Image (cartoon, rainbow, N blue to C red; front, side):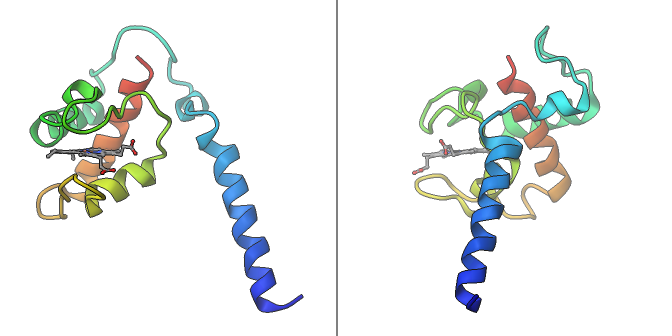
Length: 120
Ligand code: HEC
């Protein structure tokens, strides 16, 4: 097999495993044994911190994760890395948030918060 062909096969299998592992499902938490329904739980410190980061930086355009100036982000199974990419790069009309503004650990918490939000 030629190199280019090999690469395509590789890319395809990566894409396929992405679809299987998260995209088609949006229930990544089930693996961790977290409850799927029930009251919104922001007692976990990282979720509470993510919520704060969200309220300070995102909610003016995505109020409570709903559509505002920006589209709703609580209604689709966006994988974490895409949320991070959007926040860091600011695709389209959305501003970008560099590391000095939202640290990597704050961004992790933000993604946890958004995933928790999505289950409610
Ligand atoms: C100034 C307004 C504004 C702020 C602040 C903002 N966004 Fe956005 N956001 C947008 C707009 C507008 C889009 C649509 C971008 C496009 O595709 O043109 C968007 C798109 C997105 C998307 C992709 C949605 C999709 O359907 O693919 C995600 C995820 C997202 N924003 C998350 C965030 C997070 C997290 C924050 C806070 C760190 C944030 N946004 C702050 C305006 C904003």
